[in-house]
Image 1 (cartoon, rainbow, N blue to C red):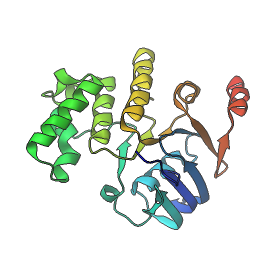
Image 2 (cartoon, rainbow, N blue to C red):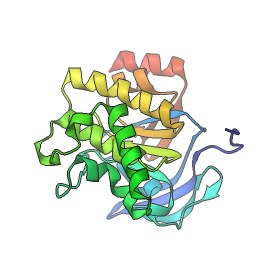
Image 3 (cartoon, helix red, strand yellow):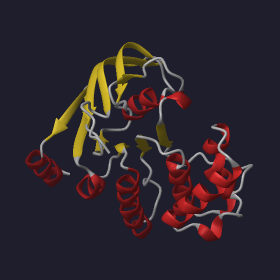
Length: 231
């Protein structure tokens, strides 16, 4: 695959409002095939930035680029972004198979292609035995695996993870860290992952950012060592 001449994810002077809350002139850049983690306190605007990239919140100013293409005004489904929300947000009326197949059906894939892709994802994520299960009967870790599979299904170039590991026990958390990195490498996608956990950026991040006082700061590795020692 030919390397892109552009950052895969780029925000340029983006301003977005959520009620009375506003972020102004946000800049952020993640290169092709890199795993970026965005840190920040609760209420700092991390999720607002991610939802803006995904098209769930509208900008009032600025530009969002994916691989050099201006997607600022595109609808969410047109952006090529796979999104894993904090709570997974699975479709409870569907079983696991249909959750994994959802984005492929709306893109009008052939039935045989959907079956092949769902089986491929289930094997990657270790959920082959769950395909006929209702999602309400899954554990937290199982739900996150299904949510990740749904996000990966249509081969997105960008993945956005909103605190995907926050509700998991320590053992499941470690397993999912490994799975997230494998999924990123398998898909060759660029990732923006929201977190408040230092372990996650230590294990996963190629790039680490923090939103502080309304500004996005990118840390160098040596700065992160000092930062983590203070936590």
